[in-house]
Length: 121
Image 1 (cartoon, rainbow, N blue to C red):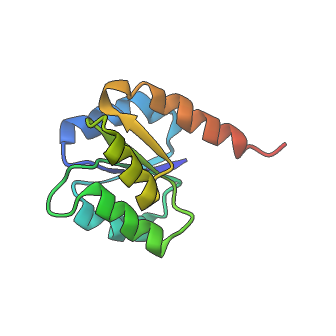
Image 2 (image 1 turned 45 degrees about the vertical axis):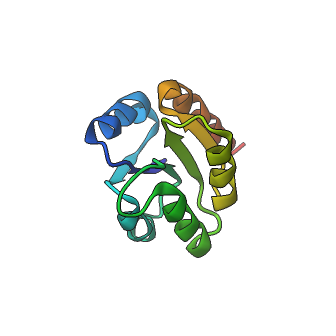
């Protein structure tokens, strides 16, 4: 499974990689939303983990851009903000899940379930 992490905090990118490294074949990274569409186009990852608050382009805008160009893209918002309005905005932008950074331990399960559904019978 290939994964793109869009996160402006390098330490957080390392933390995410350490939590899910055994599930991922290849990691790709970029540090803000302005790079996300180009990185997605170049690498075509199975999943994108997208931070919300970044400059100059935030994760909601980047998610909309990716989904407009690649409707089948699977994007999980990873954020510090547990606000209903942001959850709704993420869903409206095209994110399929919303994970708080304090609950990163749920990411391996989510990605493992995806990998299990892709195994041939």
